[in-house]
Amino acid sequence: MTMMQTICGYGVCLFMGLLCATLLWMIWTGKIDLSTLLTEANGQASMSRLQLLIFTLVVAISLFILVERGTSFPTIPDGVLTLLGISASTYAVGKAISYSRDEGVTTPVERASVRATAQALSATGAASVVTPGGTASTGATDTGHQGS
Image 1 (cartoon, helix red, strand yellow):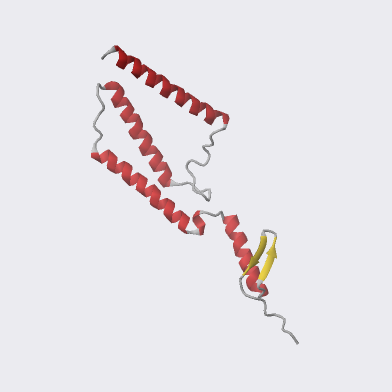
Image 2 (cartoon, helix red, strand yellow):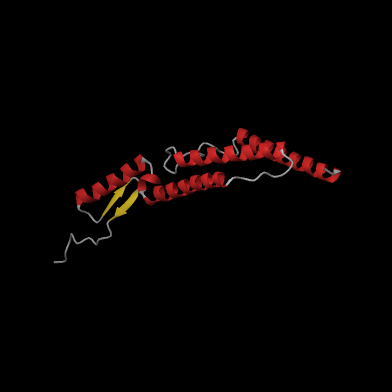
């Protein structure tokens, strides 16, 4: 290995180390919030996110160790890339399904509020109802009073 390759290698390692230290510092001080890393939009845990995170970390750490021990970049087996692709596809499909239903995006409290508003509209027979959350309307015109 030439002197220039060694210097560049140390420079890249130093840069990556500083980048990792900066990210860890930002996480530690609360500038990067990881509390929703493994949750869906409605606050429930996501198995597909956990699976993708674990697979990605295992492959990245393994690749890093192989690069450190070897003299050249290792060949990544097709099976590993297939597993990462399946994991990413599972995450994407899960995200699409969760956003296609109200249960995937809203909390039970929000759904109960909407349900209560709809029941209020149905019970009164009115074209619109005013609730603490705002005014809800069926879109129908009010025909309750007619001209004499």
